[in-house]
Length: 435
Image 1: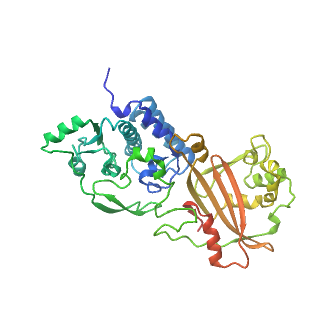
Image 2: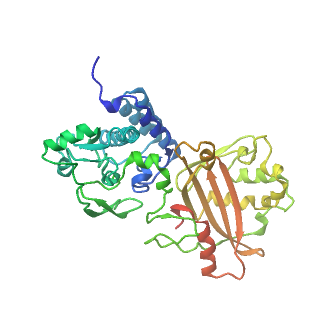
Image 3: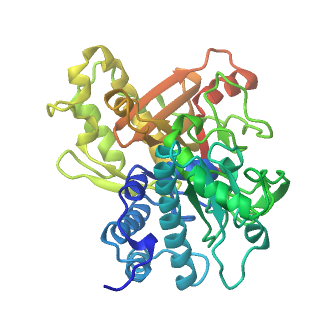
């Protein structure tokens, strides 16, 4: 039987690591960073759900079927042609980077889980540099390094430690570790190398340039332990802690981030509002018509950030086939603003993406890793003649459904009040802002 490379073989923990990832569109590789990659599947510059999903399925197939890179390369070419994707770099180089990084990090995460589960029997870990044509000298210097499994050094130096890095970590018994360090003339394990930090500017030509600090010898974006981040997702808040990523407004803005000023309101006629006693079927028909859809026939459109949104009557139906507001009469007053919500989705002032915990999954599966899901949040400011001078409309879209609301800023309002109210609606990462 021909020998297969270990990374090509089906591997339960590695496959589950990939399957648990949310498929996240991005405008560039700096959109998420370090540990966030253990919870999100991204392809830098793949900004549509459909494109990311096709790449994800191709990676999953290559891993579960054990087909390897050649199989993925064929899928890559057909996916690029199907979506007309304009990517950076030659196809061979780009496809290899996507495949290699995802498969190796899945393998490394799976190996970490196995080693973590057996560290009582194998309390030491050894760094192994795998020789390549142009080895990184820093990685080569770590070859043979033996440290306790719980040494903090592994938090930032567990492979992969850079693009195309092939280094590995092996677990050792007390006997094997002792034999290895005595052969080096030591009486105990090695001492972790001192942590030397370097600043790098990444994504200079992309949509989200940032300055990051990483340990010497580690490529930006790789200074984390993929398996530990996966097993301990509570240590990785959803898209939190980076300059372009925001918390709920109960907390200050992150250091270095200046929030955009509130957008100027677009004046609309009060005639756009429906009567307060409008029937749900009328409101649904009004909303759908803005997008060229009807109750019988749905439609799709690309939002301002390039994501495809499907518009059908199902948006308004509950599990019984009734329109949502029929099931909840106390919310019927929202119907009169349904056209405002449609305009917000169609031509937003801002779009924010927020990565949040799937709390239903966590409640039903307390012993399993947490899952994260993407929500798109569309914001727009209006003024309505004779009704209000500043209205904030919010349309939030997620895989599990959507929600919409309108908020009226107390009058008379000023710029400070408007900014305060608008900031409360800014949750996640700003991916689009109208010029």
